[in-house]
Amino acid sequence: HWIEHPDYFRIFWAIDNQDLIGEVPEKIVEEVSRLREESLAIVSRAIDAGVVSAEFKPCDTWEVATLLWTPANALIHQDTTAAMRSIRRSSLNEVYRDALDLRVAGLAAR
Image (cartoon, rainbow, N blue to C red; front, side):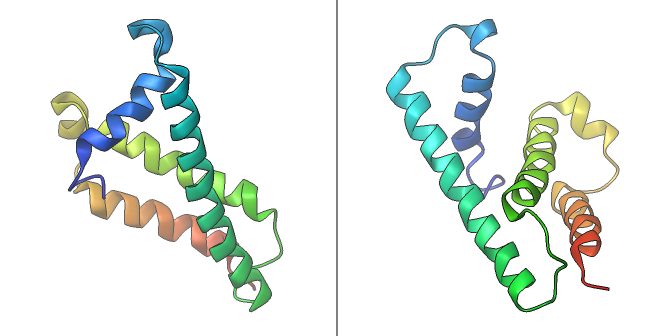
């Protein structure tokens, strides 16, 4: 989604950096917060299904969803500048897939 709609994610940056750019209207902050929470809930439910099916070990699915969400946002932020992209040796998709694989491996039921 990030690759096809990079402008969509700039609002997250704006909200997170209001001290630098000025205040974002409260209605926008509330809507983006709602969308963030909905997205985390989708990921949390997917992890919960993995716990129920015994593919994943028992865990706090909301916390794990947040732990999956955070590196995605960091990688998206990293992709916004040429200097940061030049440091990365693989495509954004490859790096994110590797990060996700490592985290999912940690969830795997033993």
